Amino acid sequence: MVNMSLLDETKFLLRKYRIFPKKLLGQNFMVENSIFQYTSDYAALNPEDVVLDVGAGLGILTRFLADRCKRVLAVEFDAKLVQALREQLQNAVNVVIIKGDVLKVPIPTFNKVVSIPPYRISSRLLLWLFSKNFDCAVSIFQTEFVNRLVASIDSNDYGWLTVFAYYYAEIELLDAVPRWMFYPQPNVDSVIIRLRPHRLPPFKLINETLFKQMVKSLFTERNRKVRNAVSTFLKGVRGIAAEDAFKMAEALPFRDKRVRELAPEDFGALANALSH
Image 1 (cartoon, rainbow, N blue to C red):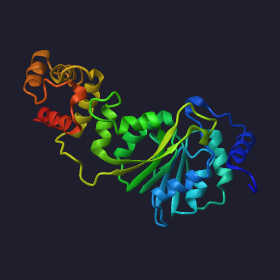
Image 2: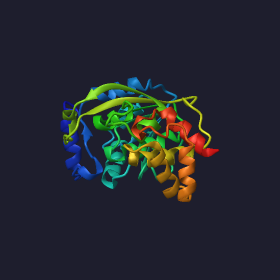
Image 3: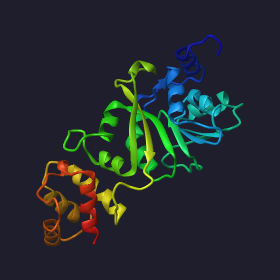
Image 4: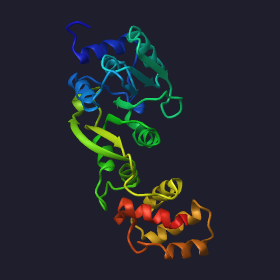
């Protein structure tokens, strides 16, 4: 689109395909060109990379990525946006357009992620990514969500997401992304982050499934003492009789601490103690 700003191009394409951005689906489109360069630079893209673009939207980031890597897997949930993607990217032979929910449809192997995903799937997307094998992910998330990822122990933002993020990946905060860079403007500012999965986790787990169940359960009672929160978890989630649950909780390390005071490694130690 010659001599057309990215905002103008976005508005034109939305009109052309009769797309009305849906707040519920988190449809806010990036209209600041420099962000595409930043994200691809932070991902250190090269011609051998297969890149996952979650929430490909109108395909503007996808088109930018396609010029810099071997293949782009462009995932989009909205049927009208998929139609726009197919038309806008019909000459991009190295783009694979995947219609559906990234968390549910089969996704081919990729080694990097560069995306501006819908904010409503942020937590579930990260949990999904933590189960995949890839080199790095550079994505934009809302500031409030990012604060939860890197929160300090015992802070208001500290929760199960912080503990999982610490266990699975190294997370770097790179650049602020003010709300005016999107159309329509969301009510929040955002941050570019880079996530690199740990080659070796920071602590060992005997039972990863139990660890994840326990951490999520304990943070529903973040202000209670560990012995009480663990008793609730053992009875409710693990189906253990009340008396046995109480005895097991009394034998645990950190039983007199509050849940919110535990470091990620402490949750690991608790899960391992319960795994024996």
